[in-house]
Length: 110
Image (tube, one colour):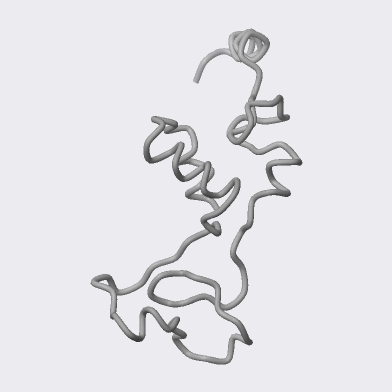
C-alpha cells in the first residue's frame, strides 16, 4: 500500500470523479447525487432467470417473466442491478464498449 502522503498527493492531482458525468465526488468509484438519482436500481420482485422487475409481491418461490416462460434461457439464474435506460444504460455501455474498467468494482457491489 502506498504511503499516506503519496495517496494525498495523488488525490489532489486526480480528485475522485463521478462514474457517470465526471463531476467531483467525495470518494473514488462513486456517483454524484444527480447521477445516483438518475440511476434506476432494481429492487423488489424480479424474474429469477433474467432479472427484469416484476409486478406484485414476493410470494412466488422462483418467479419468471413472460419472456422467460415463453423462451427458457440457456442459463440457470440471472440478476441485474440497473434498469437498462438513462444512466444505467450509459454505465453499461461505458463498461462494455468504452474501456471504462473502473465501473466494474462498484457495479459488482450493486
